[in-house]
Length: 356
Image (cartoon, rainbow, N blue to C red; front, side, top):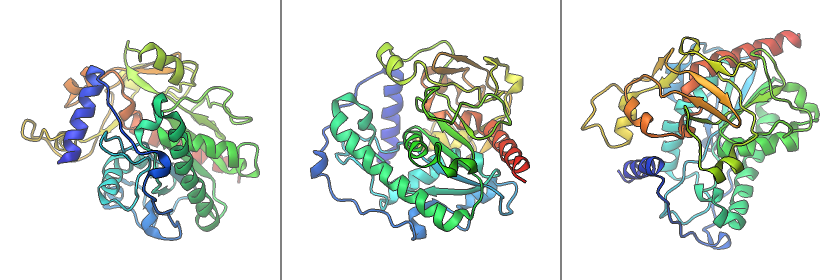
């Protein structure tokens, strides 16, 4: 119940722009959180041999794939009363939020393109992106990244078996993925195995990497795509726009080419369950709808501008709430779930054709 009211509070803050006051511990005084051992299955949110039931329900092709997907989820700890800097992956509420949020609504977009691997990691608290907490925030992000680096190394050594792979991520996850690519993949032998990097929900500039380039056609491989979604004709506050968005690469996730605009008729589909949204927000009393996840197609048109992807509010149940919010960061992936699903399969097939 506490999480429901927290989500309502965050939603209202997104609408009104209210501030949140944090009173964290000094980083050095935070409780010691055990380092994950990735040889233990419990420290993976998704492994091909232990998918949650909802993945099996969504997955179309259940055979072992010829490629893998390494997925890194976004920031989920944001409570102002949480004084810690990093998440405890043994916390059952956090695990539940990871499964019900990003694994269900984001990671599943790639489930038919490759075998899915998603590590639990000691994600950093949302406040690390506040300039006021920069010093301790960098330490928390470094700790979180150490888990990602360790889990990816374990994946390569024990699961990959020489297969090509996709890196898929969102928000804080994309920040870690960017660093992982720079350290381990870019201009390294491993780069030859990279099908594509979907680095969504963070600022990635054109010259971010030494040799990985932004992909500008739907079947291109070996590069990256990225976007940050805002409601049509809206912008972040000027300071935020300059720091977090301006000059960022913006991929059109409907056409996957250099087309700056696309029509609703081009939109393959978003993944959405109105009942789940209302239930999570504590609004089930007011709205009685199904919890079943559905793909809603031809609901969104987009426009690429400098650093932002503008999207129209999708014509779906709950449109009223989305029309009041201008920052669609929370829906960067599931707005284009089917578009990503189809595109990732195209890129995998192209990589396999090129490397027979």
